[in-house]
Length: 320
Ligand code: AMP
Ligand code: MG
Image (cartoon, rainbow, N blue to C red; front, side, top):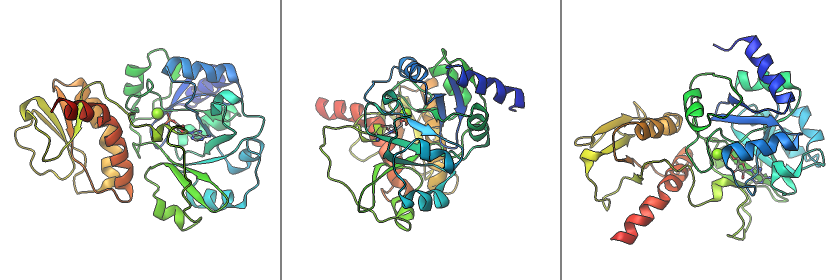
């Protein structure tokens, strides 16, 4: 249970330029005062995050956004009304109040209002916007419990333990353009839902510019090899841990983790990273995850799985 004193202490830490890990509805964040570039630099240092990967700024109410951005686009309010607080990050032209280190020098900043009482209480008490990436070492699987944070980032100044996070995968990130929105990272808020508010208008991108970690080929990568289950995959089941969605064909594996009891994709998303963490710590040699159709929330799940498996599947293809 989180006590009022814990929130107060965490808020003082944030104001004092220190780092606090806190739960959001998506994953645990590693937070610092977004207006303090030295504090933000400590996030990059602790996570070993490359400076080209910008951070998301978390606020507690929509009116706080206007001093942080240089836009009064009325679509922001429409999106905020529908999706905030919630797992949607909107990338917007930044104001000069946001230090360049937060945005990795980009002229835009990603902002969201998280839907978690502890996160909201912390931001309100700290009275500053909080820049926070996921509270894991760069490139690794995001934490969905305080224990995961402790394991990955023992150097963090303070952790607010709010139990297991609900959504389990990172926020959907969109960028507004003249015609509508583009998706920079898939999440549980789907393109179809957002399209009801603003038209979908993908931008052509130079494939070499990475402007969101969601765009990297390899990310969310566990310490043990992970593969996406397929007919082509030749594997020694007795050494593998299976992340099972349907509960079918589970026989022969060393361990099986059912991520959903009744075929619910939201449940798969919520339990995916915890299942990976659990198998990383177990005695299996590698991890196999059951794929789902790439539609709706399935897009976000497959995005995480493909990036997690990328380097291992590539090695396997090269060896064959
Ligand atoms: P993390 O919280 O570690 O999942 O990372 C936050 C994600 O938000 C990263 O993929 C960032 O690249 C992305 N992001 C933050 N700000 C921006 C921005 N201004 N433009 C594009 N992506 C952003
Ligand atoms: Mg991350």
